[in-house]
Length: 290
Image (cartoon, rainbow, N blue to C red):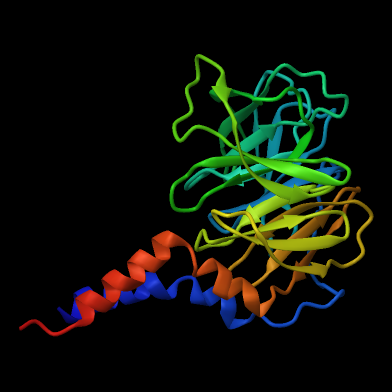
């Protein structure tokens, strides 16, 4: 039973890494690294996959994503595909060695549907033919720049970019590649959301605007706390590390910053129903047998 208890205990302890270094965030961020690749000129989405930072250029680029070594800022792999996207705006982790690419931008609100692609990433260049999944809003075209994936269930959510407020839409639990996948409205969001990310436990989401980070609870999508982000030319990326947030901006050779999380983030993230059940299971397994 000792090994069994340790295994579950380690799993339950994972989200506590989030709160270990969390404090009261200030308006200043610490430099993490600078994109060294001159091809990364409009970093518009950010994800951390297998220790690498993955980013994608804003609209106008070909179909490609960049895997960057955060220790050096150098690109160590580029994944490309032949079809040019319409307006890629976001990335989300898609399991080991993969990201979801969100071709979800629609400034003029004229697209009948948008799409997401599951793309392999890592060290080394590769050309792929990723499966594309069509997404359709229930109430007409919307502009969006944020795509998130729940770390436990894998479900995708799109957060739209309204001037004064946005809307959160859930994709079906299982995406089908050969037909439209209808989105469902599940919550509200602040205005001008340019990216978002789930926290590791799945109980909290950070929504970023150009100047502010908003912590919301999942699955209620209710606001919990907001704080100022460091000044950036056009902040459009956010991703979690084990202890901080990474915040990126558009611009050639732009700098990625480390931003502290509020102490409240740990409490919200551990409030996820899945983690609540897991903690109950860990407690039960730790009890002596009678």
